[in-house]
Structures are given as C-alpha cells and as structure tokens.
Image 1 (tube, helix red, strand yellow):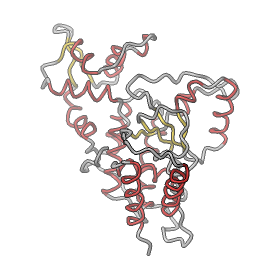
Image 2 (cartoon, rainbow, N blue to C red):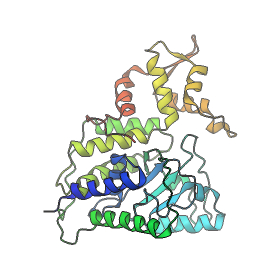
Image 3 (cartoon, helix red, strand yellow):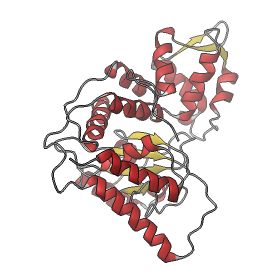
Image 4 (cartoon, helix red, strand yellow):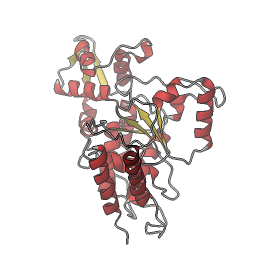
Length: 328
C-alpha cells in the first residue's frame, strides 16, 4: 500500500521551502489534472496568477511537466502560430492543459479566430475550470545555474513520484462518482456568475472529472467530502473577481439595494474600449442571468433573494456542503 498523502506532503513541503507556495488545494487541483485517471475526461485548467512572463518552463505551477502555456503568449501570437497551437490542442483532446492568465482582473480578450481550425481561442477555453492563487515574492535568487536546475529536477522527481504508479497501487477503475450536495444547482450558479461557460455539458463534466481525479490521486475508490472541498475551491475561483466584489457589495446592503456607481466602484473593473466588455455590461449580464434585480424607481441593484444563500456559499468557498479549502 502506497501512502499517496505522504508523497503529496513531500511535494508541498518542497514547494513551501523552495517556492514559498502554501496553497495546497491549488497544488492538489493541478495534480488532479495531471494524474492519468483511467476512463475519465481530461481537465483543462486556467491558473490565474501574477506570472507576467510568456515562458512557463520550470515554474512551480508547471510541476516539472510540459503542460503550461501563457495566455499572454496566445493573445499576441501571429495568426500562423496561433493556427498551429490551436491545431495541436484540438488534435490532442486527451492531453491535460494548464493555461496561465496574468490579466485576471480584467474582462477577457480572447476573441481571436484560427483560420486553420475555425475556432475562437475562447472556444478552446470554455471548459476550463479556474484556479486563482497569488504569485509569492521572495528575496531568494538562484544565480548559480547548478542550484537552479537541481531544484527543478527535485520538483519534477517529486511530481513523478506522485503521478507514476508502476506497482498499480491505485484502483484499476476510476472512483465511483458520489453526487455532492446541491451539485447541479451550484454548477448552474457558477455558469450564471461567470462569462466564460456557455456549454453546460462541458462545465458539469469538468467539475465531476475534477472530483473523480482528486479521489483517484489519493487512491480512493469513491469520491467523498475531501473531493467536494476541492470542488468548492474550483467553484470559488471560477467566478471572476469583479463579480465576487459586486456580490459582496450587494450582500452588504442587506436587501436595500446599491446605487449603480457604488457597485461599479466596488467591482474595480476598468472601462474597456469595447462596450461589450464594459463594467456596466457585466451588471446587465448578471441581470439577464437572474442573479441581480434592477429597481427602476430607486435606480439601485440588489441580489435576487432566492440566490442569496447559495451565492454566499460559492463566494465563501463552502459550496457542495463542505468546509472551505484553504486559499493561498
């Protein structure tokens, strides 16, 4: 019997010591996407973090694997290179992907179509769950290349020690999917809150796949509350930060409503050149989704009462009937 938790503990200790990463749930979500769980859909993830460089090799979130790509790079690619990248992605649908989004405080700008595939970049991202975690700052600098590569090799080895299972200690079948409390309602709420999930089947499959993969990561035969806590973290992080702030602002008004200017200020969302991406357009979108209510006489916004409790659970990271998974 292999102690998978001990191996994950070893990796988290290395990340804490060498990279100052203390966000274990985020690490476990990344590992869940990478682990080769049998007969289970792959996971595409978007990591929202302050990584401004286009190169993602040898980063902590790459975990020593060749699977991370910066969305900044995709957005600035020449059309021919974007064609090649999207063709590669669609040709390998069973490969897990990690896309890094440093510009997560702004409305997305993904509307670029590949001439070769006919796909918009945003179509490739429509099934991606999101993980939001800060990029730590450290005064430690590895000028000596030998030390840098030794640290990188250790990270890769610790990750492979978790992902590889030559003794077949994990079950041969994927864990049984046990439905979390309020699963469908919560996933639907995430879809309403976020502007990037048009496909219901893609979204609900991604959440279920994450839970099953997380259970298999630990060698379990069925999903349980630990997996539901990871789902709650993914639900929280998949809601845009400006929507979180708008909901918190309206919740603090305790049903009395908030003026438009008050909500827009709370969102901290810069105005965009395209009116479709303007902050006020986001309020109208949430209104169309039935989350917000407009009071024409008072010129105020408020939350629709029937969603208040469920919104609080998603925003607080305690959806699916579980306790919150720690945030970074």
